[in-house]
Structures are given as C-alpha cells and as structure tokens.
Image (tube, rainbow, N blue to C red; front, side, top):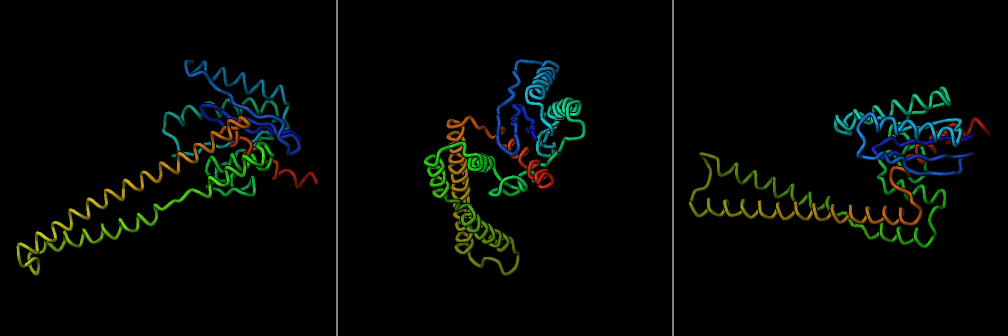
Length: 253
C-alpha cells in the first residue's frame, strides 16, 4: 500500500510511504516569478507527475485552517488545495484523507502531540526512519537540554510590578487619604518610574530569551536539513502520511 503525503504550502512538501516505509520525499518549489495562473498550472503538472510516477493507493493532505494565515495566503493555498484534490481524486477516487495540523500531529509519531513544533516533527521523523546518524541525534538532544526558558518567571515578576504600579497610581489619584506630604507623593512617583523602567528591562529579557530559543531551534532544523535534506514542510508531509498509515494499518493485519 502506497500513501502520498502532501503538505500544501508556498513550497509544498511531499512524500511516499510504501507499506509504512519512507520510499522518497521532496519539495515542489513553485517559481515566484510566475503569475497566479502559471503557478497553478505548474503545481497541477507536478502533482500529476507525482501520481503518475508513484501510483499511490491513498493520499493524505493537511487541511486548511481558517485564521492561521492571512486572507491573501489562504486564498492562494485554497486554490492549490483544490487543484491537488481534483488531481488526486481522478487517481485514487475517495481514498483521500484530510487532516487538521493538530489531528495528524497527535496521531502520527509517538513523540508528538497536537501542538508539536516544526523542529519536533523533524526530529520525530528522523528518529522513526533513522534518517540521521546516532552522533548527530545525540548532539541535537544535548542542544535541546541546554535550552532554558525562563520567560515564565520573568512574566511573574512583571505582573507583580505592574500590579504594584497600578496601586501606586490609584493611591496618588485619591482625593482623600492620599499623600499627606509632597515628599511622600514624590516617593510614590519615583517608585512608579522605577517600576516602569524595570518592566521594560524584563520585556527585553523575554524578547532576548525567545530569540535565543528560536535561534537554537532554527539551527537544529538547519542541521537536520544539511544531513538528510529534510525540510519542515517535507517533515510535515511525512507526518500527515504516517497518520493515515496508522489508521489503515490495523485493517490490514
């Protein structure tokens, strides 16, 4: 049983699973200089070629989700998705499965859940199909261990300071039982300014922490790509196809 997996995007990832084993994978890169109709024609021809070259029995495609992409992007992806569905239907009839991102992530590889990130899917695919050597995998694991996300603790400190600042401002605004001396008023004003400055420092720390984490994930993703050519879009297509394979597999035992 062959399954064609498609992650339809500006650059579409595809794969072929043959009896649950990864036969091939790659990308359909649509030239950006083409106009809309040319892009659709190019995409259609490549989908037809995939279907002709590998003759899949089933096709698994990631379904479009409203609200994730902008209107323009969603409109474009809808057109590509429609072309893919039309081509695939002619080849495999009703043997087409559409999965939302959270659905296929939660029902594909054991290491994943419905909110899995791109790099996690890449790693899960590499582990399952042994696409990278053990040393590289161990190196990636060590890098992941070294990631420290301290944004939660910083946010808690920010919340405390923000709450105190609001109290000080409310206190100064009182007409009765407010500050009794100018010195007391200046003390509150000084504290408010210090709190605001500290909150800005915390915000920068959170931004820097997020950037460092994102860079680490990006470097891990690039390392995987350099070793086996597995992009994020291709990894997704494999996860989508494997989700369908797991669903169909019990009925074939």
